[in-house]
Length: 546
Image (cartoon, rainbow, N blue to C red; front, top):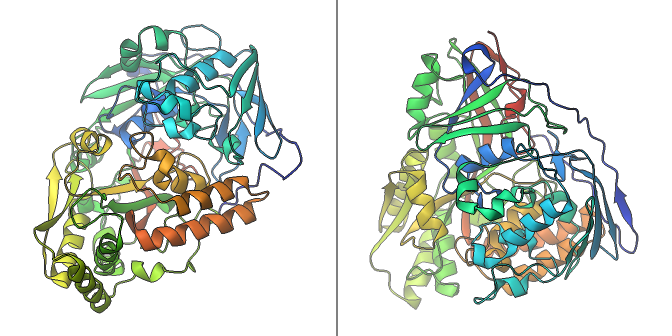
């Protein structure tokens, strides 16, 4: 895999100004009539939530929000950072203070201007726990964040560290050093919102007004989400097509059949049934490249026998060592996934194959039995072990495979638990109602180990405030993440991230399984297929012959 190096954005004791090069230009006026336009139909799944960027943490909604909104920065295919709406982001006081200057002339699709208030109001809304936004934890280092997490917080309360200096200037004060702040400034949580979003949030979530490469047209639930090229977009991702139609499917097999039948232009979700054949199917164009997605499954600590204690850790380690990742990758993924060796993906600079304790990710049935026996000596096992997954995705075969390994190695009743739709599955995960282990994974929001580790396993991301759906909390791990965010260079930060990973390898709040390649297929008429630093498709690059 290609390694992407994220340049450190902060040096200790010095002010650094991000003057990031961009290739922004204004989009071209387009027609919204699909019959005579270059509209690309692509695979989609029903978003789990209304289309508020700060509450979008899953693929179905994420693909849509990515196309509709533009943030302070964007990322290129190698993880490089380029200014988008930001003109500069200046750091001082050892990454405790940032001044953001915005470019003028940006506007939302309703014609209202994008100003400093558009960003600050959106950030305050997302960070305030009264609004129940899943990405609240992205602001955990901003001064005043803890006050917004109190149970009786005023829904209109704001982050004390944010100040609108003028229409084009934002002053940001942090409660602790955060060298990753400018990196995560291009993620969903940091997208701007127009005033209409706060006047009627329910309406906005169904019909968003945005400032990105595309303009929202319609959302027919469980059927399609349509958007057209935004003629007023001034950023780095100008669309080469006239619009996108996200056709919503409940089965990747149905989408693939539509692709082969000419009723869908592009999919980046290849069903298990096609992994052995899609690259040799002459009726399609196939793509298989290194990516940044991780596949895991989470065993929440509220399950009996799986607390954050010696018994729970022994059982997690035993289950992890029961699984032959290499064989499953060969027989089910057919060259589109590689066994995990840590919690990151290879394109991230902190990725390492040499972490202390990573032997828990290797198949060792005898050691697994030994560890399970030690756990039984603490508290005898009873019941069954289940792994839940959404049946409208591609997890069925690999979940069943690892359940068989667990059952045969540990001699316990282990089974897969299908849930009919992504919406149902994610609703249970997000609300903390899962009564079993469940499939999990991550596609990065920004190119940093911070995104995989802090946003998934730090205490600040637990309790519904971020991606830590298993509510894992370890002060020792949190402290290591704080050291990484305070580090004066990427190299030093990566050392702390790796030490944090070694703690995770002992506790296994989620069990790493595989790193997934970026796989996709299109009709022969489609060209311009490309992938971003995390392996996601670049939808703005797609075009097709008329």
